[in-house]
Image 1 (cartoon, protein in one colour):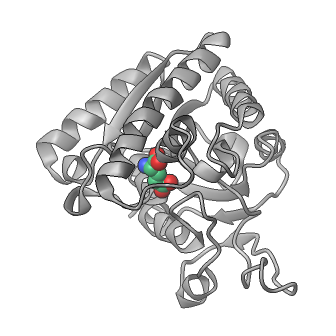
Image 2 (cartoon, helix red, strand yellow):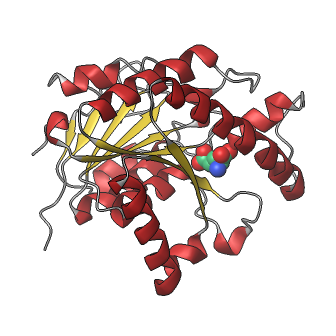
Length: 264
Ligand code: GLU
């Protein structure tokens, strides 16, 4: 394994900084391009689950706020507005390629309770069986500290495990994992392949986030720690040009690849 084109069930996570401009308004060209490529990958026979951030950022942009609110109710209000806009856009754009989408909003307590988790798994299974593309986000409007996933990198890894995916693709605003933060250190080198998530990998992953997302590199490594031991191959690539997904399909080595551990 290790070949992107062999993946059968793929979870794709896209971050706020990929979907929005710096002022929080939707990056229309990017989202249209992303949906087009994902639709084509779906057409090629792969099953896709999309984990999409962007609700809060898009809510901020739509409401014309100067910055993201600092208080929880303010963020939740933005998420409520933005999630609606986000799904409207995905429904419209995927619809242009004849794909149906479904909204799945999750909180941590749902997947930690076995009965509720089983319901979620059953729903995902049914949606995928029907050829639908589930679009997942954290249920930000009800999500308080105790029940939060915290960030969508973690959420996407949990979703990959829930749906028994064999691939997880994180689209972000940096090429992959570097030996140092490339925004501060010109000698930083891209790490192309990770076979084992050890202390070295954890130590180089600090502090490469951007202002519009909540993650950074360390949350992506934590995502790998959740997914990779469960047989999920993971890639981190730059989502600046969704055509990069075609290049991965064509066998090119892009970004950072985390090899799935053999399932015990
Ligand atoms: N759920 C948040 C949103 O849609 C994003 C969380 C994240 O990007 O990690 O705005």
